[in-house]
Image (cartoon, rainbow, N blue to C red; front, side, top):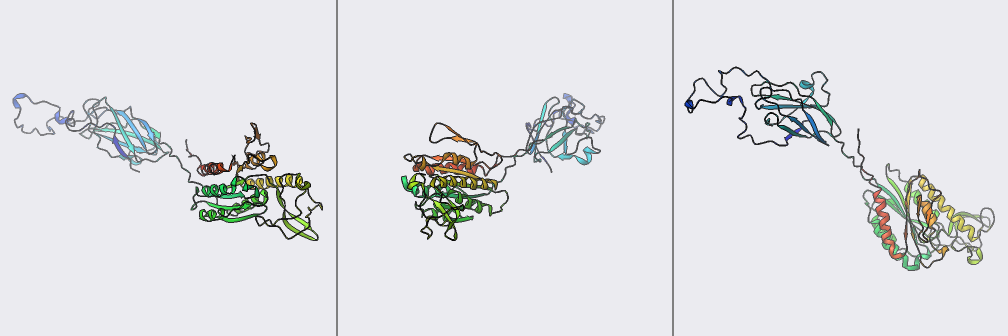
Length: 453
């Protein structure tokens, strides 16, 4: 590669170019001023030949480097050793050390330049550009006079150009929105704010690069928009039809989201779930025994363990529909043959949610958990903040209901870490979802990697 050389301070040649040149090293007597001197041309053939070379530069240095160039510096010597002004510089660089045989003649690349040498003792500077980054260069210099005499090779300076920052390309995103539309979302008209917030959240991503899915859940769950590009319009259309109804089967919804994301093998993509809820898990999916039949269904629906005498409604819900009862009018029994209490269902629902989240993280999926608080709700009818911190796999977070800090005793630094967000009111939901989108987008562009030697 040929470098481009630019003198840092190059005085005009006019008025200076002839000073110190051999054609002007003598003065004519005043009597001969204006006369024609026979046999005395500009080269003064009657004078003894110039055989004195310029002095060798021993102060050659590389004063600065950047990604594609070097700043060279040295002290000018002279035409005849250290007197008079020289005519030119021959500057060459190589990727090979100067100890190699024939370094100057066969390995070094000449830097072509019309730089006029300065007076002896003055400081010279030359900026060389067009070089490779993160590359070790060896540079040397020879001084020439107008008679063709050349100095010995200067000391050879070496330096490595700076490393260019390697800007990683933006990672593709594989994300599933998992949105709770259970009956409690009718409070504060939260369902309307969720429609607005989820639509805005979706529009912040690049549907030509990213892929997104939408899972809506209440008693059951549905994959309304499968994971794919061109997701903005389909998700907006699906979200616009949200209604508040049903229970909260969180675990099965998270499992469905993980299955969508893991079905896409795109290498290097960032995988994430946005999980939103306004309450705690109240139901779970299981195979239940009804008479002589095993039925895939969802049991539960009460958030208060004391409701309805401590037992759930004697019914099952379709796990593949948002809120639809299965056609059974007799109580469903667990595989062990008994009817579970509401307290047991709540405990099992929480456990199933943790298990689904853990399985997703083991698959390399980070979970961003968003909770909507209900200022007037009791402890059974508001989100379980400790659960949200654990499924996000973060070490700790402020407790939104007190001045305390929630410490996640099950935090695993080897699994993907998400985040936990809390919206105190429905009006805050769009802003909180905006914060979540900013955090997710930030993770798509890792910091620049700088390689140093």
